[in-house]
Length: 305
Image (tube, rainbow, N blue to C red; front, side):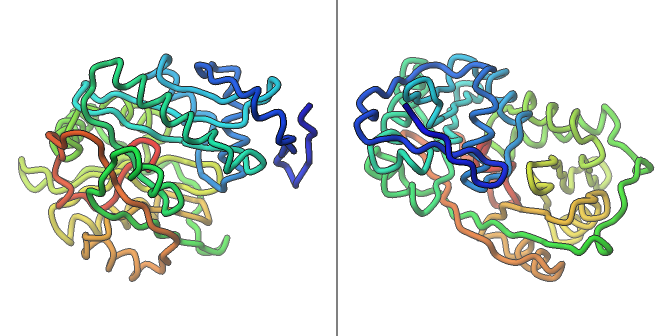
């Protein structure tokens, strides 16, 4: 049996090598949410139980876990965006089980699920550690992403306030329509969920009838996260970033910024953000719906696109 080892608030499990032959892949259920949060805590990722619930709500048959002796030790999720392309995320393996093929088996299970749905394109955001595996499975690089982090002292972080002007339903619909063009597919089900949880983070900038930019955000496990963040120019990008910083009361803020977007990078540096780590946007199959990454400052997140 797996023996639990407590490290702070995170419970890790020591898995004997001989038990790895007993690995079982199955569909994820809501009962697995605590296990998913445990794994992303171990990895230092920012997802909450609400994020895991989003996966199961929109893709109940497309999320999987790897189990050893009844203990969930690995996960993978998939989401289809209008069948134009599917997204793979949350490829997590307990550190005690790494290097034994569990991540590869989970990834292959996810790919088989998407192939069964007759979706020809797969996308994901790869860490440097995962990129070689994805390349072996036929994924190629599309563009580079960088995570930037702001750490504020308790005195520098604004106090929580409910007095911010909230986005109207009409403006939200305009944001969702613009995002379909920018992202390459309709993901309004995800953005509406983010807006419902954190409506004060949703901001739009319009120049007359022309959308100048928009931003949404969420409250993660250890940080508030800005994204998606889209702007047609520096003034709109600055307005959206400053609005988010004023509305977030957390000491830590993270942004997954497109490396090619110099406007966003310069703004983040000017606001005391520091570079944390790289990601690579990758795809497998035809890239018929690339969206408009040239106007995107930051993605929603590597788990969602």
